[in-house]
Length: 286
Image (cartoon, rainbow, N blue to C red; front, top):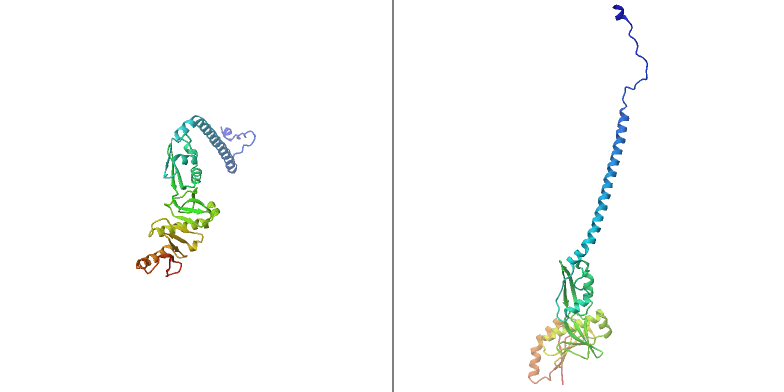
């Protein structure tokens, strides 16, 4: 028995040595590589899905446009063109200028182009073009108004209060409007700023004098700083001072001139010169 316990324990057979310790740095590196690969696979899958979705969306848009195009055009086509603000012009003239007809797609209309086309007419001062959902196009016109007859080189022209030519009248006339003379023909037709200013000054003077005298008034506007008004056989000269102030000075002195003419001492006033500040020069006829 003792020999059994004292018997030497047999040694284990030799074999290949097993690595019993772990490399934590290596494991972390492998996990990092695995995570990177997984992230790449997920990213590729995501972008592949995005591309596929975009392609499908584009395909649906093309198919929808092919099928819904005629229906959309019919839904938004112009069925009514309304024009307001007309006095001299008629609706058909404005439509011819606008070059738009019912049935055209409302969303294809470029309002600024139509506005410029309508405003090209000499009688149109301003135009506003509006698209009204879903079938209406509205054109609002502000017309120029005749204010004077401008006579130059034996020709008459109808002008508005801004000095723009509305019509060439030739030998025709309109005695209900004041007559402005002494205007350069070429400058009038070209709309030169200085010429338009002369016409406007003549019209303003006609309005001021017309408050006190009846009958047609003629304005000599060849020199805007020395306008001359002719009415009822009298001649009024104006200087560079404000027209209204000069005319108010005359109106204050008008009762005295009437009294002088009525008492037999005068021969009738033929000319009134208002060019000098705080003075009135009166010339009597023979």
